[in-house]
Amino acid sequence: MTNDTESLEQTDGFHLVIDALKLNGITTIYGLPGIPVTDLTRKMQAEGMRVISFRHEQNAGNAAAAAGFMTGKPGICLTVSAPGFLNGLTALANATTNCFPMILISGSSEREIVDLQQGDYEEMDQLAIAKPLCKAAFRVLNAEDIGVGIARAIRSAVSGRPGGVYLDLPAKLFGQAMDAAAGKASLIKVVDAAPRQIPAPDAVKRALDLLKSAKKPLILLGKGAAYAQADADIKTLIEKTGIPYLPMSMAKGILPDTHEQCASAARSFVLPEADVVLLVGARLNWLLSHGKGKTWGGQGHKNAGGQKFIQIDISPTEADSNVAIDAPLVGDIGSCVSALLAGMGSSWAKAPAEWTSAVADRKNKNVAKMAETLAKNPPVMNYHSSLNVVRDIVKANPDAMLVNEGANALDFTRSIVDMYKPRKRLDVGTWGVMGIGMGFAVAAAVESGQPVIAIEGDSAFGFSGMEVETICRYNLPVCIVVMNNNGVYRGDEVNVTGGKDPSPMVFVKGARYDKMMEAFGGVGVQATTPAELRRAMEEAIKSRKPTLINAIIDEGAGTESGRITSLNPTSAAKKK
Ligand code: ADP
Ligand code: TZD
Ligand code: MG
Image 1 (cartoon, rainbow, N blue to C red):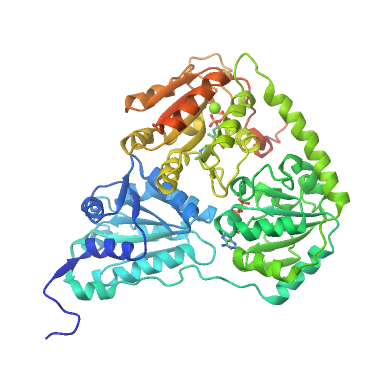
Image 2 (cartoon, rainbow, N blue to C red):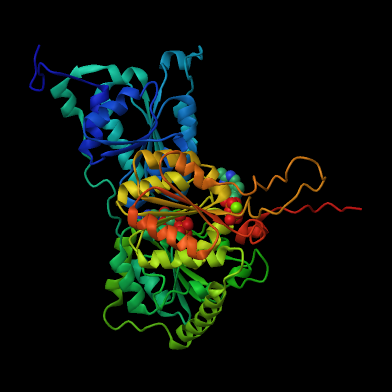
């Protein structure tokens, strides 16, 4: 028997996976080889894909997530079964939490043996384990279904609220042969993977009516706004209305942080004072004190501050998650913002001058105070004197990517280092997770081609530090600055018992992280002064050589948990 699509040539599962990804414009894979995906990585490279091979799957997964955020296409992480899969799973769950599109593709062991729990090599029911931790999870058993499996994974990752998707590919699938023409015909090129979602006209009107009534309006930009790539319309909205705005950490740079309407330096003034707040791709989660409490001018920590909220979000169930949302605007940010602009027409009144000048006054005062602090040059570097250098370097290199993790190293960098362009800042995100550093840095370099500056707490760096070898192997233009204060939050704690073990919070004193980079052929520098740090960073950016600068920071300069000390539980038990 013959039919139209039959030919003499054959293809197999390996090639159908590769062809399906390439057909959908996916040409870079972040992963770690081993049974059953070793040959897949080789064949991917042979077929012209870029395969970035990591030392630990969590870092490959974080790289895929960052790629997803930067490009709007799902980043792909490829792992082996059971332990490799589990190593990648934290990154998948983190991507889902951050609303970043990624697909974790893991090889898996023989279904028959796994399902009877007969003890296969790396046996695990991966699909069942992944399901509650991501947006969607699929398994493909037959080669002719690979096209559908990859199409469903792509759509699930990027449509609606983006997130992580798991795709389970059992070992047997890769070797399955089928007719080449039939295989080609089985592949799907996904059309309009993230369709626009136009907001309802009555919802737009409700939002505009509320905004018009505001005496003290405020716009809050979240990382959803950065992800949406609607930069020009967002800028027009802000400038046309004259409303002060606050960028969340990864929304920094949608407009330059130096923009006159940026209210970051007056955050604690504008949040409780505002009467109408327009949220653009930002959830009222813990990062915004759940929209209530003192931060918002509420009496106690459960009391709302009385603000009215307009919330633009693609997820229809986000509104009212923490406080009442008066005007939900459900749709994609591009469509919602342009609908607001269209509805405003040409005679929209600017935000009241009384409000905008009060915000400007407060901001200017705080900026002047900060400038004084930054100009100080204490004998041992602290967060301010070192980050003052980073601030200048980023200003001079606005196209560079900035990766940032740690506690004090995160909080001070976020507030001191201005960003000038959208989607240039990648950080610990919604979970405040340590370990994203080197994975994000690799993806930032690979996806943008620009120099990457990674500002890392010494503890934070330790979670993914082995990837300095990956950075050297691929010769990526990454400059890591380890803010070395000898510990978690601070380096000066001692064991209160006087025993031999150190405090749980501290590391080896005087550790030379720069030598780690030298071990793999990169440039290592120890910097004890701002001048040394500046020289080393300038050289790293110019040379584009993998560089690690061990920046010595006063070990007493940090505070416990940085800005979120209050989240530490304290005992209510009465003590004698
Ligand atoms: P941040 O931490 O910066 O405050 P969040 O991660 O809390 O930001 O919020 C991002 C929000 O953006 C999520 O609720 C998500 O549903 C939404 N979002 C993501 N992409 C889009 C988009 N293209 N259009 C509309 N909303 C989006
Ligand atoms: N583990 C994971 C995966 N994520 C976390 N957030 C933590 C542990 C707890 N944690 C923080 O929240 S910040 C931090 C840890 C361990 C490290 C802070 O130390 P650092 O930064 O050296 O990175 P500073 O500059 O010393 O504060
Ligand atoms: Mg530290």
